[in-house]
Image (cartoon, rainbow over all chains, first blue to last red; front, side, top):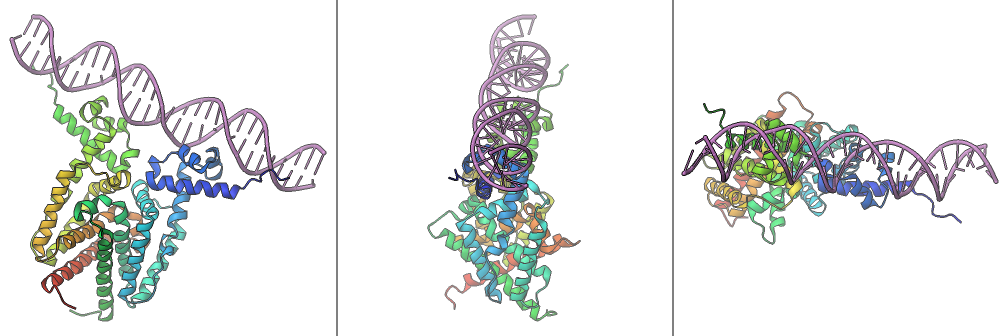
Length: 204
Length: 204
DNA sequence: AGAAATTACAACCACCTAGTTGGAAACTGG
DNA sequence: CCAGTTTCCAACTAGGTGGTTGTAATTTCT
């Protein structure tokens, strides 16, 4: 008989999943190695064998969860409506699962400019910038990047700052729907302005 | 002679200043009580005497730094330009000193919906909403709140997510100026749309 | 089958951390 | 000048923290 074969890939995946959850809710400094191991049902020594240390584990979580952030929701169609639609879908995605936005802000706060997984993430960003240029022909690379930063800022800040929403808009049943509409409208207006400007470069 | 009188207010202020800096850079979980006391040049026992514990000290820092966040930069003038100008000044303020945005996001991530200093902050928010309505006559309370959330999201996310900017727009000498212009433009367009809509309520 | 390598884990360790204490120095009211 | 109170601090503590180690079980290679 084969008395239960070892499945190191499964163990790694279990660990990474538990680490993602722990880092997502508590951040790098607040996370506890023991808690991650317990949550995964794995001895914590495995963490050091597979990932190295706490920082490297955080790196692995960030790369796994964020490198594909911009791929999970594609830009479809063209014109300003396409960008607005994209923003709406990104908003919905983050509303359903705030893991990516939270990790993004944890990384920004705890790591500053020190970014891990550079090549892959740069490629993902470049790809999104290209999609934006394709959707809004004539728009400059810089303006496309700025539009994307605007979209990410609007969609990602919402789930991380629930208090701000509560203080400013005071809840209400259709609150999320209202905020979503506001984001989509803002993105549409900005994208439309960029597109219009791209078609008449030197107008007053 | 008076051999150096005790100045408890100064000691408190020193502690609060050091705590603000520490919490700003490291967050609640990453901050160290010993470091705060050392930075302030004060024995750490004073922290427990004056503020209670680490959490309460964080509360004090948040209330001191964030309750007035929306007051430090006023909304001046009227019309969509006034809101755009406000966004620009808020952007500049946060660019010069990222304390408020960082604390805001630390609080959002580490505290969730549990907000401290509610009455004062609610009053500040309400006041800003009122200023917005005054600047954009006819606009609804909800739309004014949403516009302010948009402004705060855009201005506060930038200094906390330097990496995003780097990945998307890749630096450059006038990078900050470009981002600022993008934010101001986006706010102007949104405010203008809200104002226009407010003046012709039932238009196609 | 047997040696070598891999995976697993309980116990362990050195250090750090928030919070406490006991008492000295400085002020205050009488 | 003398209790009584407040401010201050060095030293301490109890428990947590990231990281390691010694060893046993399992798999692989030949």
